[in-house]
Length: 82
Image 1 (cartoon, one colour):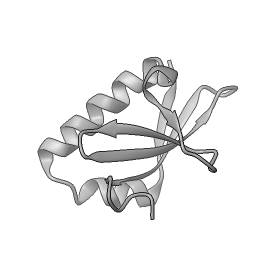
Image 2 (cartoon, one colour):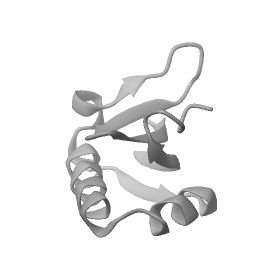
Image 3 (tube, rainbow, N blue to C red):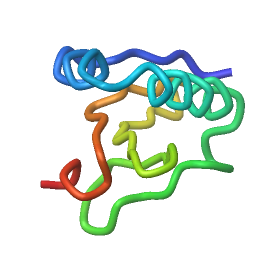
């Protein structure tokens, strides 16, 4: 099982989301902590990964050696990659 840490920027973005979206994101992160390779996709041209939560995306960094997932950004799919 992977440990999850959340960056300060991701915490700020998360706090602004509606409650139903927050619940969905928490569920996606819980599933990903068990087997992130099943759910996460690598971003092209970037070492980061993304997880889908409906119309929202979770951008994260995965460390295989330490078994950690660091959430870098959380946002709507139209704006999170900018």
